[in-house]
Length: 102
Image (cartoon, rainbow, N blue to C red; front, side):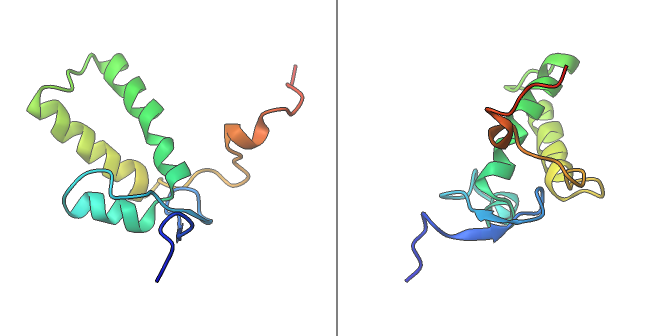
């Protein structure tokens, strides 16, 4: 039996094997795909990106059209042609404590 806490996935966003989410982030095929192909760290990158989109475009998350737009953008963010983070990208968590560039 696999220990779900330590299970890993080859993250579609970050391009390396990392701990997976504890459960699918929402029901349905896209939630299952994210659970199976995106790490917890990779999924954590979506929330600030989504917030920026909501604020920049003045979106209302309660509006069904906005939810459709966000779901489409979520799929593009993780699985689109430019979904992978740039070569050499380091997460902010890994950079903490490193000297700041001036």
